[in-house]
Image (cartoon, rainbow, N blue to C red; front, side, top):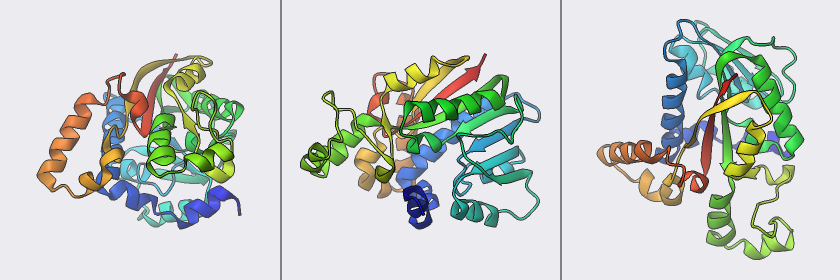
Length: 260
């Protein structure tokens, strides 16, 4: 069993997205998914790295035609357990780096809401994005989620007092970019890394948004909010989540691309 399988076999991803602080990322992502689907009569949706189906299953239950591809068997089993058989969804085990079992230009919306978290080299990221672009129709959208560098430095390195550890393990470059490998589970990027990757493909950026913004810095306060306060927090977050001066400080970002 590799590091990724071990992690997801024991991690409650649904629980995270159902928590108050996790709901910010989920509700924000769903808002932009629906924006991309607006005006399409019968869109074909692909989610690569569908996890336990928080997005794919929800969209299928809303009547959208979905193909969900997931690498981890445990996650795929949980995804299928949420279905009653009436949903227009096909769930397949597969790897974001090789979608050769899927045809070219078949989907109106392709989502990679998890794979880039766990790809550690530029070539791996290129392969995943290349496959997503290939299977997307011209004019269709590609949504790619990333974990961001600066919140990790601020909260993990300094906030949780891991500075000595990461320095000794050479996990930081001289310009404070996190260096990850599979045992570390998550790969951190900066906005310029995302832009450079996008520039290698026939896509245009529609928006780069902060999926959770300041939420994870204050998650204990967010989780303790009542419904009225949380509604106001969401109102505030959605007002500022497209501000480019704040993007790099968000724990998660969502890159919204259109295939040319």
